[in-house]
Length: 578
Image (tube, rainbow, N blue to C red; front, side):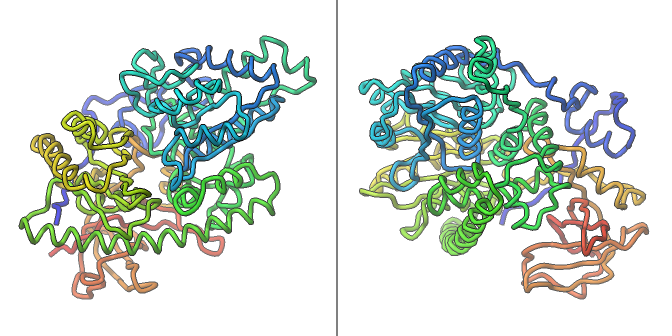
């Protein structure tokens, strides 16, 4: 098994004064995350970067305006994950509120169309008599599809955030902060963030032309859509730089105040989330997976319709369908995970060590769940992973996840340079990527991928490093501190939720629901008795009544039961201590 190493985040020795922070623990956490000034903690909308810095956005706005004025047909083409669903719902809602007519949307079918804008999707757009296609959260590598659309007199605006190839599709306009010539400072916008900026620019354009007065419309407040921006941004696990923290914090504030779409409310209620105290972690672990289940198991149109629902009953019915799909996804994932572990155990027996990477395929794998499987295997073994599932006509669809220091898309590009015919297509970014290969090329792809990863990992540590914020003083084991940490994010990718470690004495331990370990512990040097929960423990190790002392990596939580609140520790890792 992979070695696990605890590494504590470094707090700069030269203290930076943060006047807005009065709590010493919170100040320490911010400093360890690179906060050096109070301005970096400004989460007001005034702190957002101006949309004018996005290259291509003015051209995109002009095209959209010309098509809208002419009354032509507009088709939004989204993606089948939560970022794509929120992007689609956001632009449809905004354009409707702006009074734009003749708008429809299409989410590619994962199993029939594959990812993003494809020739088959453009053919469907033809059937819908589309004059303009606007992609959201996809399209920057859609060369054949854009060429096909142009051949049939369909204009194309691409809005995307994925890494762009050196040569771009011949679209009428492309808006993407990751284009090589784009000066937009935040390269970490999610697809929904790019869509939001596009609509900000379009609204300003309409305002300049007195559109709203001419059509007797009240100018729509796009802040109403920040709940969608927050959800899509957190779900896509993009870096929470300051600009994204503003978008997420503003969206969370609206959700907590009840000013969010009824679809998000329905999912929060069905998962028993406390809306007034909803966090970015709730979006990530409870809301997003249920929307993703639509794209994984059926079609993401179900998720889009939930986010577009206008009444509570419609939203509740859609949320219940998504809950059922998510339960089905969990069952499929569990079976796939067991098959993958059998495969990996055999690899370990053959090599007497854990390989530097994994390429996993089983004919029973489900296309919609291979991304989740790769994530689970990566988390367990801390290795880059690509999982494949059988598609149509002898092709395999692959979804990969990577580790720090191994840029997955770059690895795939190096594989492609070795044999350009090996992959039908590929795309993605550093930590996640997708691809399609011919089944007969699996062994060769495995060989080339393994060799290219080996060239990179020889210079990095393959231990599973758990970064923590160290120990906390006993005086901070209280409800006030737990609430403070929950309320002072938003926490997420590259701005991680506070994670602490320490040694505790065990007072009680027992198994609940047959697989979770419930503990009552006390800090080693004395302090309050604290309830802990460790989910899905190794039943071969726990519970163990002979263990009286444990090292725990944990998060400080607010535990609510029958209206009463107390602190608890959510255990992420635990080890017996002699």
